[in-house]
Amino acid sequence: MNQQTAFVQLATPQVLAWLESQLARGCTRPSLYKSLLDAGWQAASASQMMRLTPEEMQAFGAAIAVSKQPTPSLESSSATVAVPSPLLDAAGGMVDAGDKWVEVIEQRHDPELMVFANLLSPAECEALIDAARPRLSRSLTVDIKTGGEELHPDRTSQGMFFARSENAVVQRIEARIAKLLRWPVQNGEGLQVLRYPPGAQYRPHYDYFNPAEPGTPAILLRGGQRVATLIIYLFEPEEGGATVFPDIGVQVAPRRGNAVFFSYAQAHPASRTLHGGEPVVTGEKWIATKWLREREFT
Image (cartoon, rainbow, N blue to C red):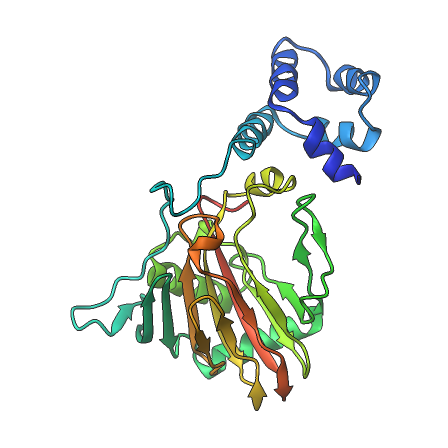
């Protein structure tokens, strides 16, 4: 068991509530740190706990309590969360993205999925690639056991993240996405740019965080669940690299400037949002991914 897993497992709602009450009474953090050590906590886990604000302790305790409740299946429960939802025009083929109208060239309803044409211009695609290229490193995935990050053999791309509103191009694209999807800019993670050289792929996976995993409560502190994904194609390979949805038999070709959007109202395989990136055969593929959260992502 690593330190972050130990932290999540020891940080029960009862422990968090006790710490909140002790802080409210005026107890110092060094004294509470010593109490945790005396109770058998490892130093690293106790230090992580002491870095939390009272508000974060309260939110963390609530998230852990929720994660320990049985997770209803999509078939047996109508409980869902709000998700981004593009609004088609009267003719049913265009969406207002603020500074431009964007054409919808494919739409599905189970799951909600849309393919947009020319969401970005060639110049915008090139600007993102140029800014991302010197910052690329081997792509990481979220470690669902701890809430941290890890290398994973299923993901063989190179990538980087832009901070929200990092530059004028990123700011303009994020505003366009927010208008297109009717979802606040602050509820989105930073744009991630990925490069797939020949042979690189991302095997089928889900983008939501599995509620049953021990690392999920820590992840959800930063804005709640992921509820939708937007994949924008910045550079298309000569062959290969399609985005595939095995559960629904859909395959989206990587065309420069186009994008595929899909939402998932519950974090459950029945959302039918299993998807992956097929291996690039010839050339290279560049994409930008925007993940949308329930609440403000911090």
